[in-house]
Image 1 (cartoon, rainbow, N blue to C red):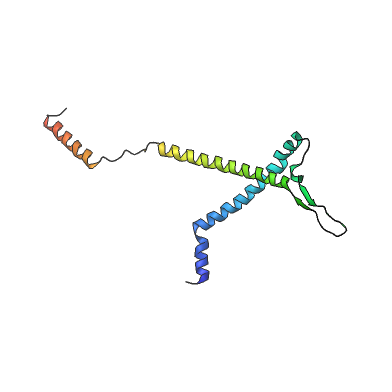
Image 2 (image 1 turned 180 degrees about the vertical axis):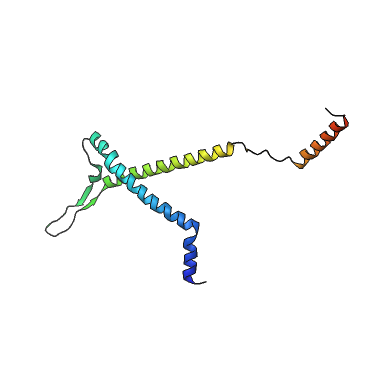
Length: 140
């Protein structure tokens, strides 16, 4: 089997395609969460904290030098705070999705089977004995 045909077989597996779709959806969802945090959640928090823009919070280790054309060196902990909030939102959404799927699985498992179970061999034998006794007039 050539490498090209092995690669084609690998790509055409359902798992790989499902994974690719999951990665693409995840990337798009990440952009939505970033927008939610940066544009909806953080502005009110900044307003509550006297107008602080979390994304701009940083500790400058070395100031920029425009003459030497060197950019500043800083620890941007505000961006890290935003990233942590984004992670918590994604984790919460994933938790809610898994919880909903588990709830549906439990409901499906708890639902009674619409078809009655076939009698066991012992039950079938007992039913035959009962029917024979009834036919002879000896049973109730």
